[in-house]
Length: 317
Ligand code: APR
Image 1 (cartoon, rainbow, N blue to C red):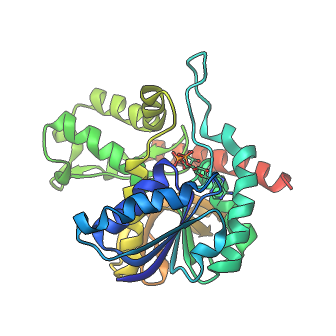
Image 2 (cartoon, rainbow, N blue to C red):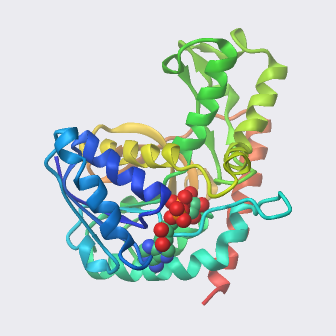
């Protein structure tokens, strides 16, 4: 069992993260920080704490407006940031359009982690994902294996779900991976998609797969459009916990992670979604996948999009 998980931001995603930690009995202590007045984090935690007798879990859950509540955490899950939401005209922003507002929040987050949880593994969910985790990395100066972004688990889960529905088989039969940035340029890797270990094309037509891959790239926006306010929150929360469990239980599980590349895939010091082994040291190894020429070109395009957003981060004070 983990001693302590610190959760930053207790809104839609943070709330599910905390309640899932409790229902899984994943940690002995949870500290939730959220700056929202009057005492939003305290209220959120009290609500979940009062459910623990029903859930049969003994977890200490503490909420606060200030960061000392995450002191000594082994893991930090960062969800602090404004989500995408539908505008009055029915459109909604891209994740990248959240950058300037979420960067300011991220700098406060980084200061809090640095002061109170300098040895934690950091898993960041806030958007634009690749740029926010890059900013945290620059501010925290943590080793690259200890800080990562959660995107690929979610994007791949969406791809798997759509394929399972189209093939009319269990979601457990589908293996799929989405690489690259967590934006519209993300790359579902059809050549690595399997149903019961068999090529996906045996179950789903190429035309249908093209539609599924397009839907996968836009899946976050689809949820935003349907919800009307805010963005997906259950799926990102449980995806981040899959990463926590892989590290905490030293599973050496291969999952798609926004990892800080050190020359792999020709990229250095940028966070890009790639398959990685997660174990007791965090990101232990980046796995190389053989891509088709089309997938390679799409992946390069996605890396360029991440580079562009991170260049904007570098320019921001
Ligand atoms: N420190 C701590 N918490 C903060 C800070 C801060 N400096 N700034 C904002 N928050 C809190 C807000 O008060 C809010 O309660 O972060 C919470 C975010 O919750 P929601 O608005 O419900 O957003 P959510 O859907 O959880 O998404 C959070 O993850 O997927 C991304 O795009 C999404 O960037 C967004 C983030």
